[in-house]
Image (cartoon, rainbow, N blue to C red; front, side):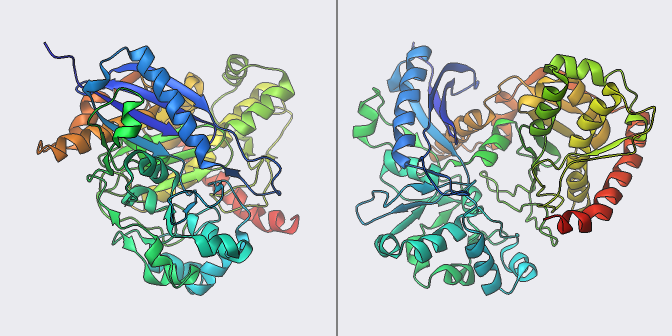
Length: 503
């Protein structure tokens, strides 16, 4: 009897590469591996870079570890998919070797270049009208212009622009390709028509179009793994899928591949995103408009302040997470009218980069550790609630929220999310959603390439398993939090001029 077919999912993030080996039929995880990434040291403030060779070395190390743990026949591995950090810029020369280190998603040294591109497109409103999205600092387009302005010798050598996950695909297959999802984070793609935008490319450089790979539907694979790369691991004929950005792969790995399902990530920052089967655009530019990596669209809300804020509050009171939750649970829902604006690191949505944290409504009754602790935790979700309301205005009809990230380990926080956002919240059995999504997309590509017409939603139904923790919204608390949400929104609007004045 033949051994079962298996697949590999790779998540190449900022801090490390994680690899899962999974059963290609059930999605059951058979082996895991991880290897760290180093940053380029000694850079100027705002710069964030990595040598792409770091990713390749980490991929090799993590893949070897996962295969050892899985103890499967490597010759039965049929497909591999890569999830990568979004918005990075990997510049290749004629020889296919990176010209310089990659500028990453969190590199904020390109403010001037971003403003220059937006101005060339006619301003923020025109930018949204033409591209379908608001061009943010950190998108790839501004990094390319930065290279042109600051390192013209390197720019003269530029022949191919790739994103981090595309580069790993290129190393494994020799093919330079892009798919809709990750490409939509470059700031160069019309996300509605899913094709490169001529005016946006020209705003960076008149010859840029010849340096961008063709953008394709993610159902088409990146290629076949080169024999030289495969032989080092005992692999044979392995299809490498199109892959995608980490948010896109996280959506697949949480089963967020049909309308109504939302993914909520409660990490240092907070994100909520949901699959749309039609083009999505926010005329105000608050909700990031991306394509997904299955052929749909993936509007995404990102706030800057979740666990960063609560970790600071824990340190003030000398609490661990369980102690924080127990203390907050002693206060009533709504924190006796006390509101906390959690803008410790400024904020992206709402657009308040110069904002700071605010307690509002302190009284003799609410000036207590338990009430203030609850207000801090409520504030992080009310902050997400503003953007979630915007998503609803633009057509989101949430049926279920699937929570990931460190905050999803807290049953108390899950309950707050369900009550404030007004939808059921569940957790997931597999924490490495991006790597699982990459493996799932790889099997989807492989099956369709073989002529087996397979829907990604059918795979997700078989592979994605719910965790034990969940929360249902309580109608009475949801009504209370609806009122608190309105006050929260009025308060930050009122304080916005003061935030600007203190910059």
